Amino acid sequence: MEHDELECFLILADELHFGRTADRMRLSRARVSQLVQRTERRIGAPLFVRTSRRVALTDLGRQLRNDLEPHHRAITAAIVRATATARSIGGVLFVGFAGPPAGEVVMRAAEAMRVDHPGLSVEICEVPLSDPYGKLRDGGYDVQLTELPVREADLGKGPTLLAEERVLVIASGHPLAARDSVSLEDLADVPLLTIDGDVPEYWREHHAPARTPSGRPIARGPGITNMQEALMLVAGGKGAMLSAAHTATYFARPGVTYVPFEDAGPVGYGLVWRAKDNTDAVRAFARSALVVSRGVASKDATPAAPRRTTGPVERHGIGPERSAKALLPSKA
Image (cartoon, rainbow, N blue to C red; front, side, top):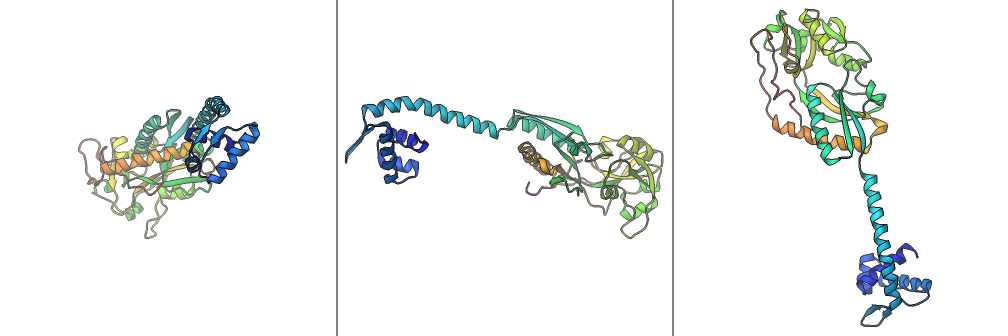
């Protein structure tokens, strides 16, 4: 029997009405009659008794229905299970994060994924400062929440999910450390540490610009590969660095001061993945991260004012509850 013949026979055997059978199959009554007649010719005997008032199964029709129904239900259930399996998300998703606030969002998103997709295991790890895209490209990560901008042709990226104010990380004995705020023009008065490693030039310029907005040159300081190395050099007076405000909370260090900028744009974070591997798991994680970041946005609706703390560490910035002020993201 053809599939449409089988469906038509079982539905008519259930409804015993050509009109209702036609409605359920979205066919005309004439087409339903043709299918029934074709099935009866295939079997070699009538399956229904049809009069102007009623439709009833013949004994042979009743026997065929009883024999077919359990197999039809089993086939339908098998197709449903196969479809559900094909649409489910399983395996392991490796997620990178750049900086503690991004790590908090990634961790919350991973927890939500365990509920929504129990067959998927999410493993998270920090993105190296000196190689922001290497582990993503070689398959070490499937997706990462990283600092923007990203201008890589082989990488896809989503909208800005988090944003923080930018601060100048500088030795506490430097004259700029006594200021309540600094401007980008003040960078001409202090060398900036540079990031060594496999870093795109635009990314390096974003973290350590070569000139101020008016064109004044900015001296280059020593190269660094991680945050602890950078803070040691800053405390020793070897240079300063631009960073997100969370650094004051997560990397407090004697001899280092964090001064907010009055004219620098925020530091943004967004999801990045290999453009050719935009999988169902990556898209599901992106949706989860979007929801989590919106929750952070509603919690941190008002910015905190810059502050200084007393004691051996003087820092400006925002406390842990404000360290990841989120922007409402655009559509994922």
